[in-house]
Length: 312
Ligand code: CP
Image 1 (cartoon, helix red, strand yellow):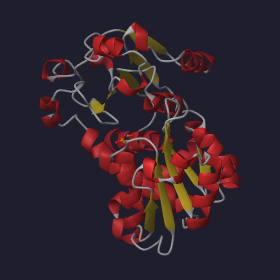
Image 2 (cartoon, rainbow, N blue to C red; image 1 turned 90 degrees about the vertical axis):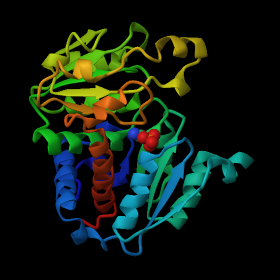
Image 3 (cartoon, helix red, strand yellow; image 1 turned 135 degrees about the vertical axis):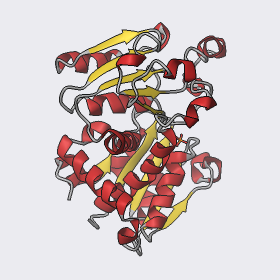
Image 4 (tube, rainbow, N blue to C red; image 1 turned 30 degrees about the horizontal axis):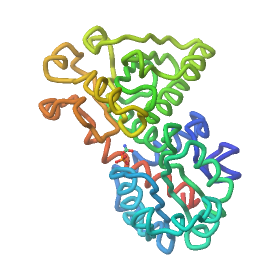
């Protein structure tokens, strides 16, 4: 059973703040075991139904949750696309969630509005998981990232983590930095254009915790010092101005030339989808772990479903 009061009482995951370090290790250790011996877990969700509500596009999060539930022996119901649900007739999110709670044992939702996950969690009669709410948070991507780091580097502390790209709108970055800052001796380097810097509230949180960080404008000036280079795409859908997006979209491109400056045991992560920010030639470098990360995403979601349904 997860020990955090929030998780235990409301069985909801809205933000990465809902986890403490003990909860995280509980989920990650279970995920590591599922990765080693998946067959042991293949029937544990027999008879359970996961509702998959994606009001924003997704490939990995949606398919990994659905695949996770199927691999655990459970079933999945979903709305094929938002415009065929009664939301188009004006139904509120509250009523949608109340309704879907009657059909399912656990709900996963992605929505474009910041705060929608909190509203849904409050109104759900079954465990609820945020699969991304606007530019706010994407806590299960953070679990994915943590499992990948743990599997690849065998630790979640004493790391120099560099995050690069759209640090303003990138919800995966916000969740990841807040979570990795809970582990001892981690340091952060933020690489972004001035216009897409990491939000002040995240910097203030690091300052409050006395955690070292710096902000730079190029990959080249720091790549030789980092254990993790976490690349992100410039988020076109969150720009108000297309011209501004066009100006910034190719701010960073990781290629083999830049990789030649990095440590032998550095890893490159990316939540995906990628656009231009990692050249395809980097995929063949054994430090490129972003497709491994995709697989770990499904495994860690299997662990989360088991914990939330109290099967484990
Ligand atoms: N990483 C991630 O959230 O990918 P999708 O948008 O494809 O779900």
